[in-house]
Image (cartoon, rainbow, N blue to C red; front, top):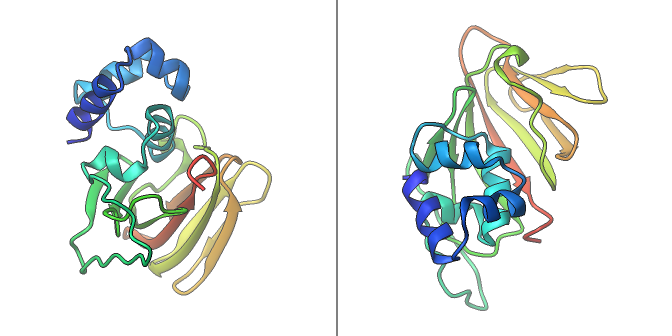
Length: 185
């Protein structure tokens, strides 16, 4: 779904892969692989694509923004969010139908067990908040010693700093992960 939606949005914006690459900072070869369904991009690549296309992250998952009324509200029933999966994480975007949000709320399953599973520590504009729902999560960042969060613990950090979360236990961990993007705020 991401592949066809990205191609549709790029075509509607009359952008070549090269132009989208220049706008998003994502290489042409990576963009081509994403559009052809050969690559599942990381969250920071998705955020960069949304910024380059001038759309919200939710639109890349097929959520068409609705006109913004004066009073805003969005409800997502348990398990009915828009799911996107990478090798390291399974994201469930909740409240994806609400346009022009200042932050992106996700329920994420942390599948990664080591930072070796990442080519490099992801980074993007904005800030992030993580609240552990189940399991234990070790948070790795560029400038700080890794630390482990248990159920009920939370962390807030600058997303421009390289960062990655890995499950610290035998089972996958689940977190509420909220990300802001200054390009949308």
